[in-house]
Amino acid sequence: MVLKERIQAFAQLGEQIKSLTEVEIDNLCFRAGNGNSWFTPESVQLALNAWGESLTEESLSAWTNNYKLEPTAPKKVGLVMAGNIPLVGFHDLLSVLISGHKAMVKLSSQDKVLMQFMISEINTISETLGANIIHAERMNEADAIIATGSDNSARYFKHYFAKHPHIIRQNRTAVAVINGNEITEELTNFGKDYFQYFGLGCRNISKIYAPKGYDFVKLIDALMAYETVLDHHKYRNNYDYNKSIYLVNGEPHLDSGFFLMRESEALVSPISVLFYEYYNSEAELDLTLAKHHDKIQCVVSANGWYEGSIPLGKAQQPELSDYADGVDTLEFLSGI
Image (tube, rainbow, N blue to C red; front, top):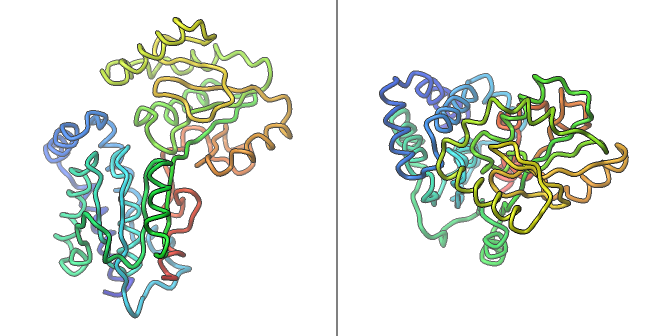
């Protein structure tokens, strides 16, 4: 298949996702939730909707336009996928297939239902494209590797795949920057960045930077619309546990009734906790964020006022060209 045909096939996949019936979506949500109880119907539908909107001929053509993606000798690219949020591994599969290579796929046990659904749909649309997907538990025959895991897993991957061209992804998080001028609607939008997927994604906000003396009551009040997050038993268990630890240890914290806030220099907060840190000047903030550059997936601020950031509420809406860890996957694949 030439690139144009591959683009058309994935655009058709986008249309098929958008045309799923309510019964089909309910069935997918039920099976995905059985496989991973963090995958609520809302989370699954959010992920499906996002891919349905992204997989258009126009978007795919614009994304691939500046690359040479007609390999004379297609390579086998091993994909070790994450499963922390629904369909988190699909971008890598899409990248490999649209580049004209073969994907050796090791699915995460946490996200098998949805990924298998997408692979099945690809096979239905094009047997030729589907034939380029190989399920594999071992990557011995892979010519290149794209692997995602924890920091510990990443160290193992880097050692094990040292002789292969590779992209190894490890733990990252997202942060928010506020300046005190945000209106209530903007602060409410921040809730999408923090609460969607229960904070399990690498684009979920785990920490917020605020000017010295900022009163977080305004933020907490703006986020009350998300208090139903406590209805999920796993989230509630995390909230109750972290609250009890802070109380027993006498650690200063803010309690909204459905999430906790704690001042910390650390970047990654536990589920149900939002870390915060004050800054005295924008210059000081610049230095702090630069120090953590390798661990920050994205930065959000109201209307993207902070340089290099995206608007509040948009962290979970990445473009096709928003690559994990900032490593251009298509450039990597066009060069192997």
